[in-house]
Image (tube, rainbow, N blue to C red; front, side):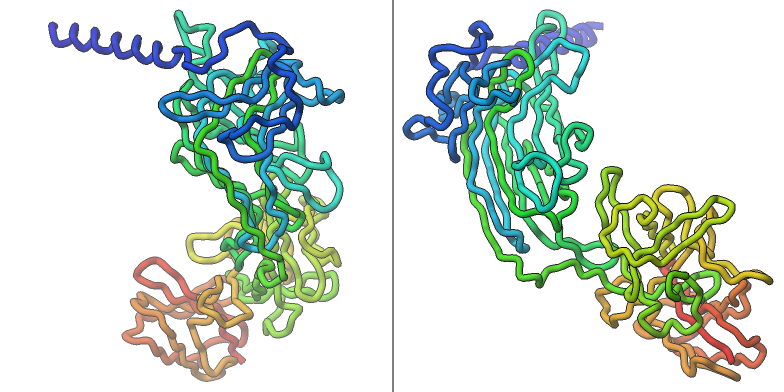
Length: 515
């Protein structure tokens, strides 16, 4: 009983201490009345103080207070205080701000970047008391960057880091004790309002020193089907990393960063910055790092036939020879997410249309990237190493089936062998996806009376199986080595699929033709 009482006392003491810490007033906190303008806020938009401590050029659009410095915990801090309706510079309704702009990285080659680091303390952010929660909070930093084409303001924000207030309880019910940090990201170039998403990142306590690193730039990343050039925006807050790739990287022209205090639709915002550094790199884009969207041949798992374009029509092919059998997958960014175009080497991207009872596929002349809703596909990598391609998010998949009357490429809601495709690379490189199919060599192929299966660079093969185009298994064997001779005199003329099953559950494939 005494132990329980002691535990309760300790718990309540700790809770009280936590509340006191959260709600305490910082040494450099402004506790005066919240007004729009003061005599101390008239210094001018671009007028800075000597030795400002913080890097970057000042942009002061608040008549409430000018930028100043403070000293807390033995450290010099930049003081950014703004209030609602204190912007007297802009007459078009833009929000108040005291920010610092940093020179931009104006090249788009891989390796170009803008990187800012610092430490922040948040003492107060805007709060409106209205029914719209999106009006609460203030921005502490933002990624900037112009783009080609139309859409959005002339100097758009790409991602803004928003601090929203969290209020205490009890005696602190009307006090901001911590702040939820969000990333407000564009969904498309020039996106604003509904063209953005707001993603929660983490919570930070009031007046707690929090490290911050923001890097915006261009790099190469691996994709399902090769590599891709991305325009990235990565932030590290208090040691936690949050990576994000900006939509439509091919439209990006530059990478920029601003920080300070921006936006207050009610009340006051007080942000402190210290330990700020900035660097940038500019690499000219010479075209050598364009997306390497490798071309593949697509073999249907159920039928063993290749996907081919014959003009605007998609047809099955027995041989897989020629560029009309070669396809690539080009990633596209839409407001609803990331998808892929399936692009023919000799024509354009595949379009799905028609009705549920009469679905149609067309090989169009449209080039990728194409964001039209009838030309984007979701890629699913299956556990057996095959791929399935879903028309957008409709639950209907690129499909091949054969019956007595049909031999059709279509898209159906069936998720079985007919919707699974083996990717056979057109480039013989061990780095490419889909080269599992090249690890099984069959000769002669086409075969007649017998053939040899050579399992190249494949160890621990548990079983080899052969299936006809109807999905029926016609042969199986457990090889003792990497070479297997098969008597095919009883095989009917046609196309077969050879599967090699490994101990680690991997499956390798190849196509066999019997004459």
